[in-house]
Amino acid sequence: MSLGEECPSVRDGHCVVNPTKKCRFCDCGGDSFQLAGAVSVIMTYYKLQDTVEDSGFFKRSAARILRLFIKRSYKKARKAYPKIDEDTKIMMEQQREAEKNNCGIDRCADPTAKLISKLCGYMSEDNENQKRVLESFGYYLGRWIYIMDAADDLEKDIRDGSFNPFRNSRRETMEETMLYCNDVLNMTVAQLIMAYDLIELSVYKELLDNIVYNGLSLQQKYNLFEKKKKKCRKKDKDYFAYLSKGDKRS
Image (cartoon, rainbow, N blue to C red; front, top):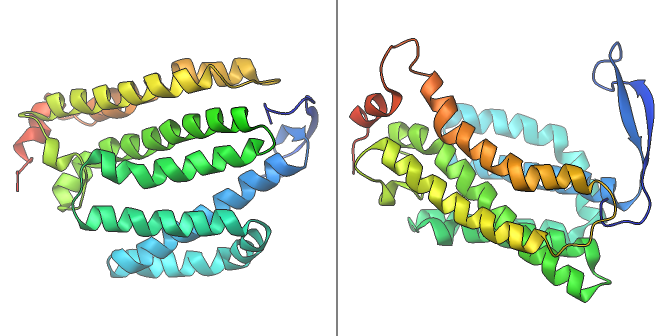
């Protein structure tokens, strides 16, 4: 929406989920909302498909039920955006292959990064220069999303014995490992900002500036450090020392 020349209007209304609650709506239809909705449905469908194939009985059963609920919406989104559906399918296959081969963080993050890069490129297909910038921004945004998710799940994956690209590059303590994850994320954000500064935005620039320049780093700080330390306040012990005791290297 920020790439467009018109500023969408806002109207008052009632929440769709909770009709008793009043809220404000962006009164703008068109390609932006259609694309966002279709991407959300398509990626959710393939995520559920992945859960059905790789998870245990209970998660697999729940995923099958949820997949039935969105199957109609998925078919509609696939028909409207067949290219995005194909790109997502390829990404999931590449992701599964990378994780199956126990690859490192760069190889594992690449499929998600490439998918988000393509999605951002679709937003400006008529402007080749802008498209290249958006693709670069999308690549590092997708890379940040995957790495952030992997770093946030590291504790759980260690305890469950599940795959995590950071397991092969752990440091002596969990705190040092989180600091390493944070460094990897910071380098990714630096590249993301370089591309973002070249994008020509017409509206919502202040909001996007706040997310890109401040929000990503604050989210890293919360997920990697502050949220985890809260878990041990009731135990009256240092979180990272506590976690490292259960960190059995394979």
